[in-house]
Image 1 (cartoon, rainbow, N blue to C red):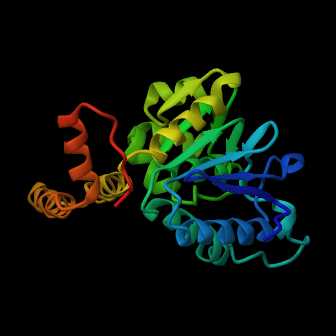
Image 2: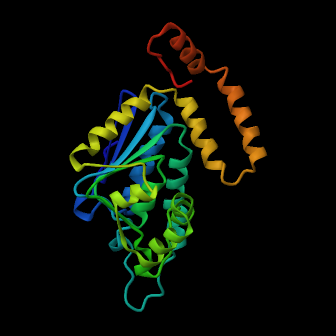
Length: 263
């Protein structure tokens, strides 16, 4: 498939999806949503893919929704933004959250609005030192969508979440790391090197176990301790029969590098 708004490739188990509208800070249009959806469908269908890396082209990661794509004429009744969330942003977040593999986000510049929350929908977020996160919705009379009202309180607590959401202030990447919003802030020139090194690590890792770890972490906030312990037992029971567990143990005993297959 030929893409116009993204760059996408798969190589050695690593899928790299780059938002590619740098002149508009990679803001989303319906065309971009369709192309991202097509790329993610390919990730899900290709059994060789072991990790997904998401990033942006140019000086920004993603400025959220391109408002020119749904401009409202003066005097018009408005637009159904709920439809936009239901049709595009919610499925995008759910796909990233439920992909049976690690999803890395390399935030190379500003991540604003839906762009900020798109990053937070990924499993591990690296950000360049010059990057920043802005919950810009309040400036338009809106609420943080793209899962923002779910992710923010869980990552940084209610007080900081409320301040970011209501004030719409810029949060520098270094502060985002300090608050626990992201995994790590790195020098600008090291961002993609570190992101690719992490992707290569995951491409050779026991993917099935990582997928189960991801799933268990995501449901833990709604489970009781008893329910979570039961889930852990169920997952461990299944993983104990996996190729990767047997290979990991054998490699440890033989003092060699394991050859994981993700199964």
